[in-house]
Image (tube, rainbow, N blue to C red; front, side, top):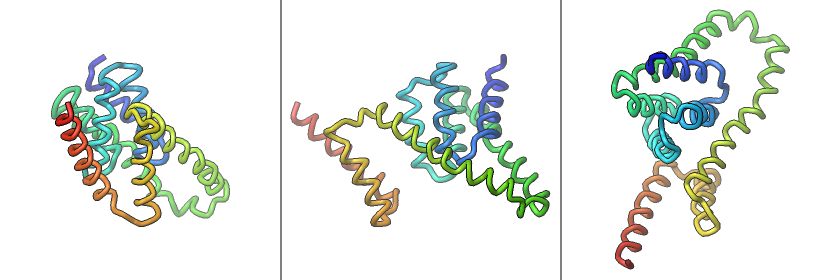
Length: 180
């Protein structure tokens, strides 16, 4: 199968059947791209995910663009971005056209209430997977915990956390290099 068609269909399928946004898509993208097809290594995927989170815009679109670019350059990034965006666009268009017909439907309301806990699990799963891949251990576990608490409890901007972590990582690397 043509790589462009295969990549488009993978991202279209994930975009169409994943509820919960970019973080809920991460384990599915990883399974398809890293595990099943071995198009990108686990380490590269984690790096692309970190860049995608740091870049402005929607995480799912960002990661699809970076993966597409890694696979086939600009054309690949356009194909994977379209595959990610098109299902949401079509679904939102359909909802906008027919929303007034089912907005008060208790059946639909109950479905969405039931989906919410599953979305939380879909967001939590890649967090643990990324922690394992990033080699989080008992010596550095404090970094993500403190970062999360600063964002959640004190309202720090994630941008400042990313900048501080980058500077800290650079300084730590310089320290280790000078020690050796």
